[in-house]
Amino acid sequence: MKAIESDLVVCSADKVVPDATVLVEGGRVAGVCANAELAGLVSSGKLAAGDVIDRRGCLVMPGLVNTHMHQYGVLSHGIPPAQGVTGFESFLLDYWWPRIEDRVRKSEVLTTSLATMAEMLHSGTTSFCDILEAPLCEGDTLIAQGEQIERAGMRAIVSLESSERVSKANGEACLRQNAESAQHFSARGTGLVRGAICTHTTFTCPRGMIEHAKELACENGCLYQFHLCESRYELEWAMSHLGCTPLSVYNSAGALGPDTLAAQCVKLGEGDLDLLASSGTRAAHLPISNCEVGGGFAPVPSMLQKDVCLGLGTDGYVNDMFQVMRATFLVHKAACETTTVMDSKQVFSLATEKGAQAMGLSKVGRIESGWAADLVAYDMAPQPTPINEGNVFDQLVVFGRASSVRDVWVAGKRLMQDGRLLTLDEERNAAQLRQCADTFWRGL
Image (cartoon, rainbow, N blue to C red; front, side, top):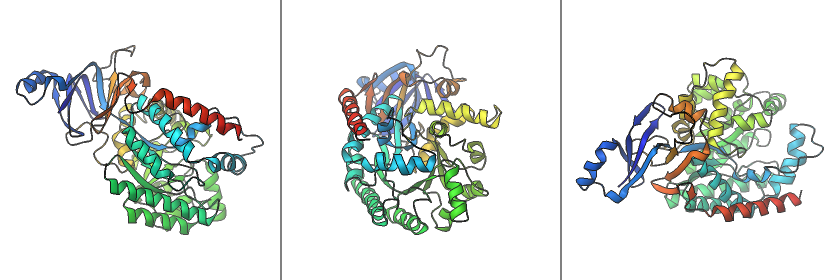
């Protein structure tokens, strides 16, 4: 058994324990005890003195959960701008699809995966849900990506966005790669990496494909996920071409439910919010990237009032969950013109326990006996004002910083110690990413 001694244990959004120690055994939390009890545990032989990790001056909290990520997306950070783009449709047809997604191969996927895992770990993220958008990648890409994530020790879901925008045959091939990945990681049984079935949108996936995708998800006992109304484009397209909202298409295809995750959900149509809630469909909110694309503000306060299970994500854009929490706390107050929405406790819950639920992860996101020992030690000293029981959520959500993350554990295994990554060669991976991006950009 290991013990992590701290000044404050943030067990969840509704429980904070001062002067406490987290006990870890077999990859799970064995309990939380007062620091004063440590000497007795050591003297009784229940705990070896060498197994006590001194993190006084720090708080210990659950690892952060990124419910929607595109690891390959780091290739677009600083990329030369698109030329001649006239709108959202033009951006996809003339630039992003032919010049970015269709050129991504396994080598780019593996390089970006290593670099973004380092970025996420440094900002306290222990779990993430990834969607690869690369319809022409090699057939073993998802499995290779997932196994690399396993070796690094992170908890993740991997999937390949499938659609018929290239061809019907390509869409079927991408769905097969999703299913094969889900079967592969289920058989491995490590519990760290899982597969999922993923489609794109209603304007690239006909109803029959959506039905088939959901069937595959049910057959493989895995998550089904898709993008939903990132901007008004999909809603207007569906109303014009299909005579109904995109969410209605998924509903008629039998694709909604507790094992379905809809990302974005920015421009919902009439009745969609009630349909999302009544079906139990889960959602991923991406506040920073929604601003970047000018998509608008997702109706997150209304979703939460209707008990939609919701998590937060980076979308592969700004991969720092502290910044995502801060944006979530702020943007909805501005959009709703009130300070009464999205308090810091609620936002922290979305970035931890609720995010894990949205991904379908069991017993992840809290510090509680029997739950996964996915933990972060956060150095309180750099904060300019004191962190205490009464203000800890404001201090983390509004003023938290990735640079204060000192240690990270996933399933009880330490992946970062004193700011140094233990399972990734960060310097080499960063150099490889810079070279990869430079080469990739030269092909534009």
